Length: 520
Image (cartoon, rainbow, N blue to C red; front, side):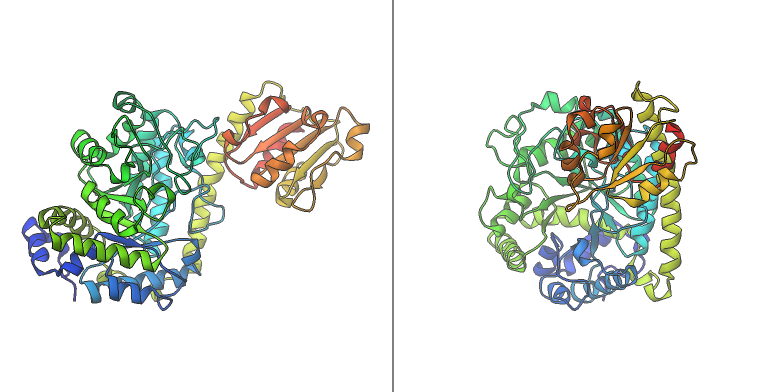
């Protein structure tokens, strides 16, 4: 039976204190834990996880997603099982940022934060947030690990890349906060990351511990501005810590995930943040400052985190639970310290939709639902993609309207749809020639390109594989190649080698048609 009953809208501090008084130590410690799980069904180890360890949160990855109907059924079942075994619902979370980091696929795919941020229009960010929230809520998720508030120059390489809304801290703060508002309006808890700022760092904290030698004064004028804006939001939220060292903030070199000066001193006291603070996955190499996972969990809570994430290994998940229980029993973590985090977690859960009152997924027509989501996504995508395409044309002085008239155009692309879209433009010029590329079809000069020095090439850059192929082209071909870059602009550093580069920030099928209209 639920510890909080059904009348959650009437909750008070006294109600939360009453809930705390009824919870066992295992239930209390469980609320601090966020676990990943195996498989796509409740039966594949997940039920055991909830029964035994009683976590406060569950994170889903791509390998946990089957059909949308199955996913919604599973999330609904997980909530009911959690209430049955722990007395409390779960925070069911997912990384649905957009761009390269999405777990739920739509057609077209959600646009990246960079694509949204470069428009500079906060209403666009909120619309994207609402559409994302609508999708997640219907599937049973009540927490999204987004927005990313790290700063990233779109034309420079970095680990964050197109996951960021941009490099201007004021704009990132506004766009990220409006995206978060969109999520919350659909009853999905937003999570800003990665505090205090992963921007402009090349190293990936999944594989190493990045170090950022920025002073507090420098951070207050840059990376911290978006988080300061987010911290003042009136709606419930969470902030995820970065596995990074900031030696000028914490001379011990401790990663920020375990740093009391950064969490307690900077985030809580200086910025005044009152929401949930959680770690990134403690199994990442960036968290390897402490060898044992159990010790990492204890250190993270001691530093001021409310929740710790162990995403992959059941043995490590059990280790974290046992270590935290032992730390509370021994007094290493005081009951008052434990209760401070629990009050934040419970207060947040009480403001989210109640699983007991949610519609059974069996009553939802998911085929119709995803059709509506895809239609809305298509409208958003085409609007933003067309804007970026126009901006890309304006930035390239050599791209003149009608440039392709009378010329042979060779189109390098692994995407046949892009070529079909481009050639659909009626013209008296020679029909474009498609040069398919792929792992077994390396890009190379077409024989006719040598015989026709006035010809043009269009290269559809869609990922790291095609980027390698583009770089392998002869210099004489590059000089007359128009690159349609659907990836992050910073991925293509050698822009001067090409005739022109159009950054589209998306793979919208209409891009080929728009380019054909312009060239012919």
